[in-house]
Amino acid sequence: MVSVTHDKSLKIGEVASLSGLSVKTIRYYEDIGLLSPTVERSESGYRLFNSLVLTRLSFVKRAKSLGLSLSEIREILEIRDLGQLPCGEVKQCLQSKVEAINQQIAALETLRGELKELLAHWQEQPSPNQAAQTICPNIQL
Image (cartoon, rainbow, N blue to C red; front, side, top):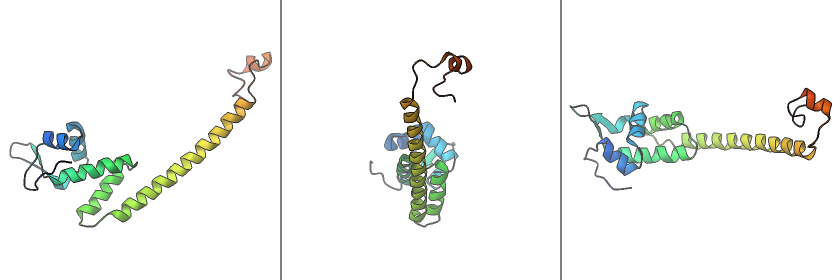
């Protein structure tokens, strides 16, 4: 990331260029409250960001890449905005993600077992009676 002094206001195009995010994404993040302490409006209505926005956007990108939702990220940022380190909240979110992944893996393993069982008993030429009463007798009981 490019080093930027804290006293210089950045326009949205500069923030986009420095963060690697689109202007549209940055506008959206501002609209949903992810950037509130780092942005203000000029007299002519332009968004002006302080350089801390880059740290915030870097956090948002990393948190999203770890599977956190924008709602979870907003809650974490709100804790930080109160002057507290939100590491405990981040840890809880990540533990929840691990549990959700474990549940998805279990569900996928169950599905894989079911598919293997179906394939093991596959009939290329089912009986005419079965064929007449189903769309695919191999998967319909």
